[in-house]
Image 1 (cartoon, rainbow, N blue to C red):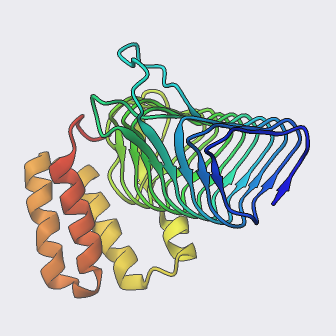
Image 2 (cartoon, rainbow, N blue to C red):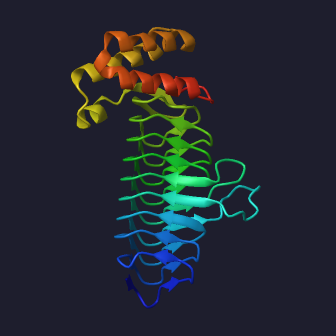
Image 3 (cartoon, rainbow, N blue to C red):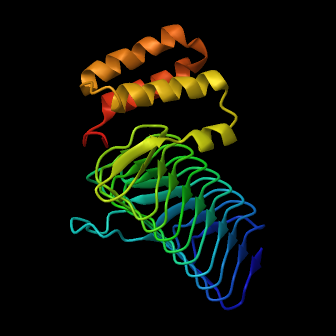
Length: 261
């Protein structure tokens, strides 16, 4: 284990022997860190925090601190982070609350850029990108492959579907369906994330299905219930996109704040 002599690792911390800990870092007694992870100088990892393998945590990051919910009374809630994440300078990740799931969870292969904030009880999927100063309010959920533009704020309890892209400096106060491209304040749906889908090797048929879902939701003046019914029928005519259609249908059924329109 390569722990700098100025670092403080409190008794009880469970750290794999391959972990590297930089100068003046502080690791609390209830922290667990998996193999291959590096912790940069002056980073603070505290609380009941579990971090997986091969993560890179840069200097001055703060992970596992008490959340900013006034109802929080010091309960042993958690942060759980998966594998191969990059967490840049001054990122803050807070523990969950007993009023919700009790854990703030980050998946695998995420790219979280400087000064981003992930509040209590958030769920961040896999392969997301949070550009500088992205702010996630409490209880926010991001699906896989979501991209959040710099200086974007996401209101508490908002859900963002997989493959969506949120543009620079957006104010996100309603749920954003999968695949959509949005930006602005007030938030506006500009189209669907066709560039991202091509980069992820979506077939022409799958992209055509996403385009059709966007048209049904936003271009034909339909009610949300009518659009949902029409989207569900796409699985019959576009079988290759059946999973994408199901993803959209499940998201719309679970949306709680209304969808960005």
